[in-house]
Image (cartoon, rainbow, N blue to C red; front, side):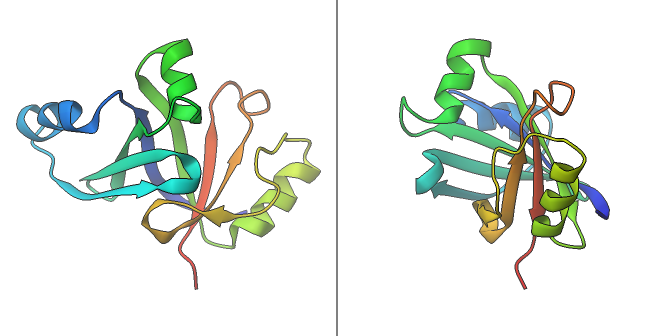
Amino acid sequence: MKISHIEHLGIAVKNIEEALPYYENVLGLKCYNIETVEDQKVKTAFLKVGDTKIELLEPTSPESTIAKFIENKGAGVHHVAFAIEDGVANALAEVEAAGVRLIDKAPRKGAEGLNIAFLHPKSTLGVLTELCEKPE
């Protein structure tokens, strides 16, 4: 697997509109995209810091994984996402062969049109890990 950079850091928030003033007015970042990912029951907002993005994640349903995360752990850092140059499907096969537990057995569509897959934090030293690639 070839990781080129940290694609983004995912941060769970209760409400994007309430969180944005901190990121924009205090930190001076600019939100450039807000979208809802229906199948993940989440609304996302993206801000750039150099070449890395911050993804704010707001639950759109009490059944979403983000709602459950906030309920159990509170708002805060949810995951780290790595950009994969040689394909998420290849990376999944490689990490599974190394004994890593997968949340996603195959890539799926995520925010900003990326192909994504998650690795289970019980196999990644407690850090929910996302693998991302731009579709070809």
